[in-house]
Length: 255
Ligand code: FE
Ligand code: ZN
Image (tube, helix red, strand yellow):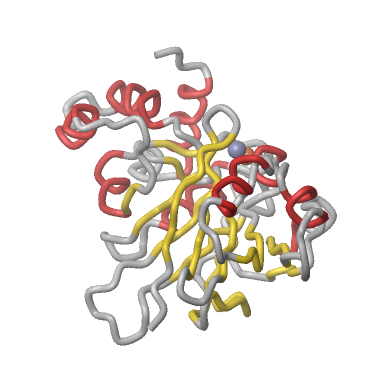
């Protein structure tokens, strides 16, 4: 069995790219390289790793800005670049167009170290947003899966509605958090402190929000499905209308 490792790579001001690696096989993949420098430094700091592919959660520049240099600067075979099929033309060097549906994770056709990577369409922040899901290994009953949520779900928050509707964001958040409670959610920006300050204004009596604030560390990725169900005001919004009100309030929140 190959053990895949996930490591956050801080990029730009508050972005996270992620390095997924199989140190034994020497294979590596990147999620959302915002810029080329930090991912290249991470790769060269772990000798023996070759970058095989890049997973983009959505087309925004702070998630794909490093792709050009990583692809054109590759020694040997350049890494493939995967995104949702509907982001065609918006992700540099995209070579895999994943036609994943809304509502459920399906095999993407991509394997990482022989493990199938699943994908689900999660419109809301952008229309072509996609979640990548590495489920626990088959037969590992205690295994925990890993999901890359981009800017759709943050710890205690969600992305702004740049292209999608409140109904789409509501469905996307519910679909992500219908995974098992321990599932790790790796997100696109370190906004957690501000998100919790807003969450507290929405639910001042929620003890889980207070607990989370008291335990806050500078780097909060990954979060879990359980923590988001307990504290995230957008996941906890019962309807798309409630989500829309909270999103509008957060857009003008200065906490
Ligand atoms: Fe974004
Ligand atoms: Zn972003």
